Image (cartoon, rainbow, N blue to C red):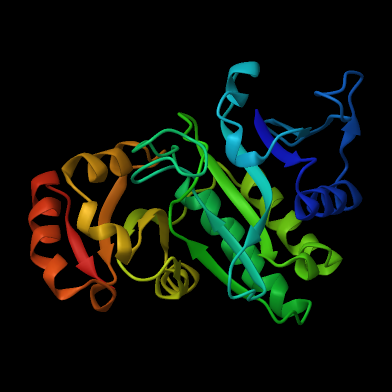
Length: 274
């Protein structure tokens, strides 16, 4: 089963949920989940449920314990940034260091590289079709929860103006559903990305133009504290076999490059420069 999760504390999340229910044939279940209606639809080979929780999505650390046979969790969420840039984004949750926003310190969620790529490609395609002035990109791995099942965020941002944008919310809704429906379709090789900014347009471009699906992404500012345990955590917490590590070489500080290559070599993973 695949679970799509919204939050009553998140205006963008509720907007995206509204667009999912408008565009897909979900049926309301007899029992509510917490205080909100729960919905279900079936594809050829699996069930997709849509629920709404009463807490912030980043705090949903115990959510999987209430369900069985979970294959993928898709959180539909707002995105916030100081710049306020209109953004459609996708990422895996989890903490590369301390748990400042939910989750467990130094524990990341299992990522689903091809599911995230399906979402990213859908965002890019529909943004152009709808003529939306939004950035489409991957975000680096960050914030909670830290879950042991494949998990991803499909987000709409970055200010209240965008959170209520129904066309943009529809794009995120289709992206989330594409990830759910195409979960077993894995045409691209899974990789880990290291370096560059939190919003890595280089990795996003590579994924959109080539048969490459990024899983965990470690941004430039986290490279100095990325040790062998962090890298192994990211490799092991990937639902598909990681083929290589791709480096945003220009997006890594000079003094961090040699220690990073030494750490990568210890994992015995191949690497290449983007």
